[in-house]
Image (tube, rainbow, N blue to C red; front, side, top):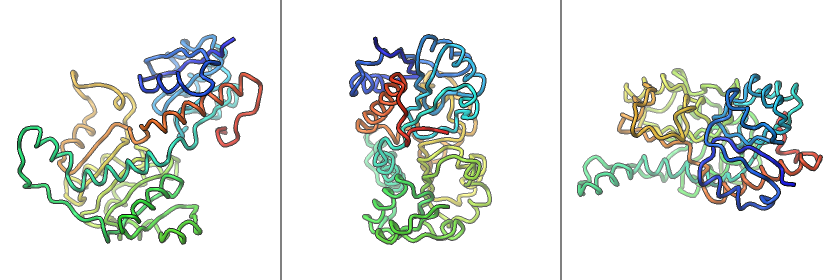
Length: 334
C-alpha cells in the first residue's frame, strides 16, 4: 500500500521532480498549494509524513496538530530548519529530517551570477535593449580580476563560491567560526577576522546558516566597517542582514551594490505573485527602488539537479520511517 504524505506549498517544478524520483511509486503524495501552519495542519490527516519548505510555520501549535492527525515525520525539502520548533517536535515524538546538501554548486554558481549581473549591469542593459535603447551610458562595471572577495561562512557552498572567485583571479578572504584550514591552504584562501574581512573586501558574500549568533550579522555597525563602494551578496538566509540598516547605508551611498536572493521578511512574499496587487512590505518596496540593488525571490537552489536531489533524499526519508528504519544520520535534525 502506498505511503500517504502531504507535500505543502508546492509548485509545478517540484511536483514534477517528486513524481519522477526513485521510489516515487511507493508514496501517495497529496500536493497542496498552501503553506503548512497550525491552521492548515488538518490537511495532513491520515498522512505518515508532511513535506515542508523554508517559509512553512512549524511552531509548537502546528506540531501539536500534526501529532493529533497522526503525522510521524516532518520532511524538510531544504537544508535550513530555523522555522521548526525542534523541541516541540521531540516532545511530540515526530522525527524531523532535512536535505543537508542538495546542490551546493547551484547556490554558489548563482551567487557569482548575481554579482556579475549587478556589477556589469546586465539586467539594466537587457531591459534597455527590449525597448530598443542601445545606449551604453550608465552601464560601466568593474573587472573582478584582482579584487578582494570576502566569503562569510565556508561550508560547502561558501567553499565552492570561493573557488569560483579564485578562478576569476580574485584575492579571497574568509571568515568562519570553524575554519577549514587545509581547504584554505589548498585553494589559496586566507582566513581573517570578521572586521578585517569587512574592511578589506571589494565584495562580501554571505553563506551562513541562521542561528542566534548570525542573526543580523550585517547591521549598522558592520556596514560602517565595510569598504566604501563594496558589493554585498546574500544567498544564505534573509535575516543575516538588517534591512533597515542596509537601506540607510544605500541612501548614504556607502555601498557599490547589493544583490539579495533572500530577504529578512520574505515569508508570505517570496514565491507569490503580487503583480496585480499592492505589495505592502514598505522596506522591500524601498529596496527594489535603488538602481544598484538586485533582488531575486529565493531561486538560487533552483536547478534540475538540486530538485532531483531534494526529491530523492526526502522520498528516502519517508520510506525509511514507513519501514521502521533509522533515518540517514546526516538528514536527522535534533
